[in-house]
Image (tube, rainbow, N blue to C red; front, side, top):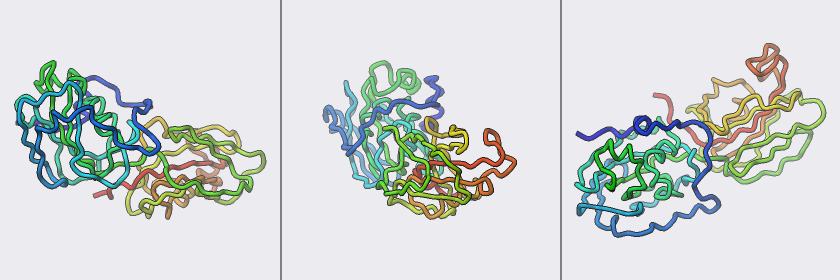
Length: 321
């Protein structure tokens, strides 16, 4: 009987903690797909069937690759995988390269409700780091994982042995952005904070001298061309929050998994800053106390605090069922 391929379970097999920030092994810039180091292994595997359902995979066994090989079976036009921390929804089917028998697969139920960091797959299948580098939402990719492409304990759990290869077909259902990728916008200073960005997108905020504005200020720093945030579905964001008076960060998601928010689950100023914006945008919001945490404050936010948020809009989640 085949196993249900669940990356959290696989992570438990190899005993790896999947939290914190990791250096990205992926390309940036134009994000061009790398060339496979060979094709001999993938050439003896035939994959058929619609890409929105489980594939039919036939192979002239045994299939073996000294190095992981891959071939794109369809070309998606969506967001590209650029970061090991990027959220993805994938369906995968895994076959024993020696026998051609299916040994594990995801559910193929059409659900987009459970995005996972790419790292939760590459921890168990490090060969996917290259095989899915710059692959895009909508792609179907055939991969033959060599010995180095599977964590040894994962390979042993599937009975592949020390030198066994595996055949893997990945369908990229949804890929979230790693950071805002919209077009830079001109923003006049007008006493607003300045924002600088690290290469991975992590923002830094420079608070100007002077009094904080007493009304909500929202400026689009990067304008994306993705879906519009309407509030009908949760929005996936990365953000940094800074206290105006202290100039200190009181909350940030960078280095962690992006968070899923509903507009009725955040302070009013944050919700207003997001509503009507587009995926791929980066938004600066200066939120006065009456649209933030008020006179009472909350946690690390003192009463009467003016808040500064820099928010990257990375995707729209599937609506709650």
